[in-house]
Image (cartoon, rainbow, N blue to C red; front, top):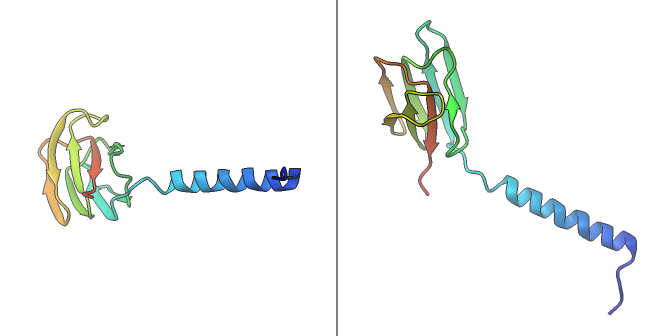
Amino acid sequence: MRALKWPGRAGLIIGTAAVLATGLATSSFAANGTFTYTTGSGAEFELNNPVDNSCFTLNGGGATGATNETDGTASLYSDENCQSFVLNIPPGQNAIFGRPPKSVAFNVPG
């Protein structure tokens, strides 16, 4: 078998790296849609297509209300690190909070 010349080897290495990088980049899942929340001051924020199983800190001191228009369940937490679970908001549902949750994570079934 003949050895590959340098340009052939370089192309093979670059092609393999591109396939691996693309494969790894597309292996992350996201909740499709928008999660909207309002803070105590009335400011509104959106998370668009949030990455599954990632913790998002809610701006403005936390949410007083939220609407989950994603295809994943939104799990809300009383701390900023998604450690102290408060409640789940299923897809297509909304909630109003007495004590503002400070972070959210998403779980997409599949």
